[in-house]
Structure formats: C-alpha cells, structure tokens
Image (tube, rainbow, N blue to C red; front, side, top):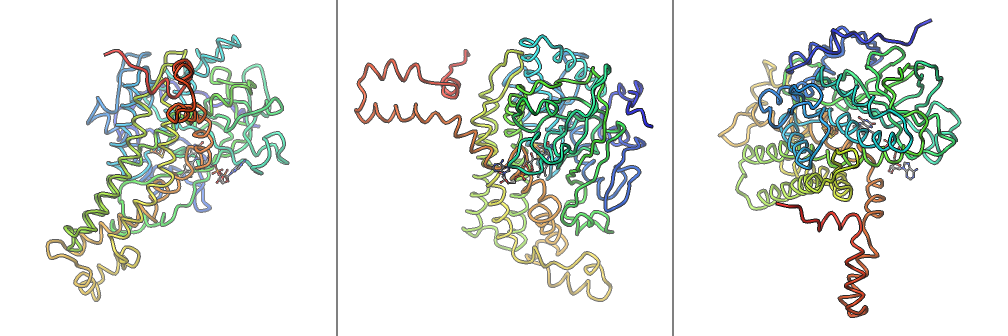
Length: 519
Ligand SMILES: Cc1cc2nc3c(=O)[nH]c(=O)nc-3n(C[C@H](O)[C@H](O)[C@H](O)COP(=O)(O)OP(=O)(O)OC[C@H]3O[C@@H](n4cnc5c(N)ncnc54)[C@H](O)[C@@H]3O)c2cc1C
Ligand code: SF4
C-alpha cells in the first residue's frame, strides 16, 4: 500500500535554478511515470522527442540571464531575482512586461515555451483566494503566498492543470456516468484531500516541477467535490503522464538536423492521470467552495487569453521564413509577395496590439494584484483562433508546393542522387539548396509539422475554443449603451437624457476605456 505522500525534499525544492542548464539538470532522476509511444520513459528530458520541449522551457531561464529586465523581477517574498513567470502583477506595467517577454520568447523558440499557464494561475488565484478569505474567513490566500514563496526560492516551473477530459460536454460534472471524467476529491482526511480523475492537453507538464490543479468550469452545489484547487509536485505518487503524439514528432529522433525543421525547440502536452493523489492542507487553495469556481475560471482566462501574444512572436519567425524563402526563390521584390508579407504583419501586429492593450488597460483587484482587461483579452485570443491560420496559409503560398514535397535529408546526402537533388532544388544563385531547404522545412514545421500544434491547434483551443470568447465578448459588449449612443445621434432622445443617461451608463468596459490615469 503506497502512502500517497511524497516528502518534499528541502534540498531540492529550495535549490534555486538560475539558468537553462541548471533547469535541464533539475529534471533528471525524478522517477516520474511518463509514457510515450507505448513505453515508460526513464528521464523524459533525455528522450529525443521530449527534449526540444524542455529546451524551449530552458530558453525562458536563459532569457532571464541575457535580458534580466525583461524576463526576471525581484521577488517580494525572498528579495531575490526570480523568473517573471512566477511573479504576481502589482501594476499594469507588470502585465505589459509579461506580454513583451512572451513575444520575445515566441521569436526565440518558434513554438510554445509552456510556462504561461502556471503564471496565469498564480495571478488569478492571488485575487480569488483573497476574496474568498475576506468573505468565507478561510486562509487560502496565506497558503498561496507560502507556496509562492517556496516556488520563488526554487525559481521553478509550475504547470496549470485546468482542462478536464469532460466526457459528455452536455452534462455537468456530477451528471456524468463516470464520476472521474472531472477531477474531484475522492477522500478527505484531517491532513488533506485525495484527488482522482484526468486532465487533458497539459502543456509542458513533464517539464514542470509542480502543477496547480483547478476546476475547468462554473460549478453548482451538486458539484462540490469537483471544486478543488491545489498544488502538487509533478512526481507525487499516483500521477501518470501519457505524452501526446504530435505530427512529425519522430523526426526529432531521426539523424540529421534538416527534416525536423526546428532542430532545437518544440512543444509538448500530456494527459495527466490522477489516481488518489494526496494534497496536504497547506497546498489546498479551494476545497468545496463551488461558488468561486466561475470567478477563478473567468479571471484565469482573462489573463491567459492575452498571454496568446506569444503567437505574435512565433508569427514574427514565420513571417521571416516566408520573406527569406521568397528571396531564395528569387522573387523578393514582386509586389504581391511584398503585399502578402504586409498582410501577415498586419494580422500579427493586430494580435499583439489587442493583447498588449488588454495589459495596459489592467486594473487593480481587492488583493492589490492587477487584472488585465477582459474584453480586450478575449478579442486578442479570438484573433489568435484565426490569424495564425491565415498567416500560415500565406507562408505556404510564398513557399511554393515544394514545402510539402521535399525529399528527405538522407536523400540529399545520398552519394548517388544527393548532388542532383541539390542542383535541382536550388533557387536564386545567392543561396545554396540547403539554405532554401532548411527554411522550407521550418515553414513546414510551423504550419503542418510538430510546431503547428503550438502555432495552430493551441491557438484554436488553448485558453478556450473560439465560442468561449464570443460568449464573453457578447456579455461585455454593452450593446444597450451603444444603442443609446445611436438614438441620441439620430435625434431620438433629448439632450437632457443624453447628459444623465449616457454619462452614468459607461459600465465596466467603457469606464476603463475612458478612465484618465494621472500623469
Ligand atoms: C495544444 C494545447 C495545449 C493546451 N494546454 C493546456 C494546459 O496547459 N492546461 C490546461 O488546463 N488546458 C490546456 N489546453 C486545453 C484547452 O483549454 C482546451 O482544449 C479548451 O478549453 C477546449 O476544450 P476541449 O479541447 O476539451 O474541447 P471540446 O470541449 O471537446 O470542444 C470541442 C467543440 O465543442 C464545443 N463545445 C464543447 N462543449 C460545449 C458545450 N457545452 N456547449 C456548446 N459547445 C460546446 C466547443 O466550443 C468546440 O467547438 C490546451 C489545449 C491545446 C490544444
Ligand atoms: S501557448 Fe503561448 S501562452 Fe500558452 S503556454 Fe504556450 S507560449 Fe505560453
């Protein structure tokens, strides 16, 4: 009988990680139960298919070294420099810097660097636990701060586990034929709770040190056992990880560096199975308070939907690849090519513009931490469900059909046919065939290969499928107020009503839009 209690090893959990190399080292020898391709993997970080995703995360540490102002800040709890991914935003400026860091990392990795779900979980939990304690006289906020302090000492990676497998999407958690289709409390003891169920699509979870488990939707009284939030070390007893298969993933274990497209970086997701996993009281931040699940989900998605500014950084790399391949094809100055690059940039900057505006228009919560603007964050994420697809379409247009018919690296290096292939696959004399092929493989990687998971599917569904944003936009769009504006301009309402009515009617979003901040 296992105890389901992993002892927190102080020498490990307080050892501060300062760079990518130390981070990669910290992932070794942890004894996680990880499956990939039907096999249990000993050290995921050393598996050729998983390693690119650990490299992308390591880049978040290395950016902290090369550009500490952008990717680190000083912890209010330890007084030491920590990754910005662990920081709770205490100003709109903090929110903006998160976005700038995300765009930069998108540029540097060309993929998902996996660290934002935990960041957005911390930020949303900070205000939600504060407001829960204020009303319910619980002590979740202090527990969260203790956990945050521990993570700041470690400078670790925290995953955010929100999405349940959900079974029948038309039924609430308690209505499912199998209780485990949403993560729930299976047992309560004096020392803590045990949880059971599964979380789907967990980004970078095998590359994390801890994860925060959260409910995925608004809950009712009957769903009380599903209202659980807690932090668990990723190697807690009872957790099993099954890595997702990505298109072209085995290219990462092929010999050579061309066919893989992006030789160093990739993303990774896993299904996480919880079999009576113990969470001690000190790491529980919600236990049965179903009323607050909706507040948590709403605040989390508000942060997370503008975190998708990351895709503008990835888009920068793809636009660069499209421009480079046009040069290699010998047509960089042709007007429709330039126009398509302009269109791609326009779409990409629109994503960035709405995301960063959501952060600039952030506002303080009762806890003191800042929450970004919900309307603009939903608009940002909704753009992301569409624009990367259009940018990818244009990149494939400029690349030419060869982007999907290239021979393999082994054929290029073949003693008999390699020379001929290099002769026939060359474009402009200014570039070698290999240069052109490498850029084409990168476009393939980002638009239909391994990193299309991060650039396209994650853009579609991550932080909620498109309809989830439309529901929020509908809720926030203040159409009655807008109708009144029209009525006044059309001469239907008298001036007095305009003065009294419209001035008092600004409502949440427009109050933020028209708020004049002191200089
Ligand atoms: C690459 C990737 C990485 C991710 N990373 C994370 C992560 O790190 N952590 C995390 O917690 N989650 C993560 N997610 C999960 C993401 O938040 C979900 O994919 C998203 O919430 C949609 O859920 P689903 O995939 O179960 O889709 P489904 O719920 O199966 O939705 C499929 C379609 O059905 C519609 N639909 C579903 N239910 C209803 C309903 N009740 N009424 C009307 N329409 C409905 C949806 O709008 C959608 O169009 C990730 C997803 C991806 C693809
Ligand atoms: S998809 Fe973007 S926001 Fe989400 S974890 Fe990856 S890099 Fe961060």
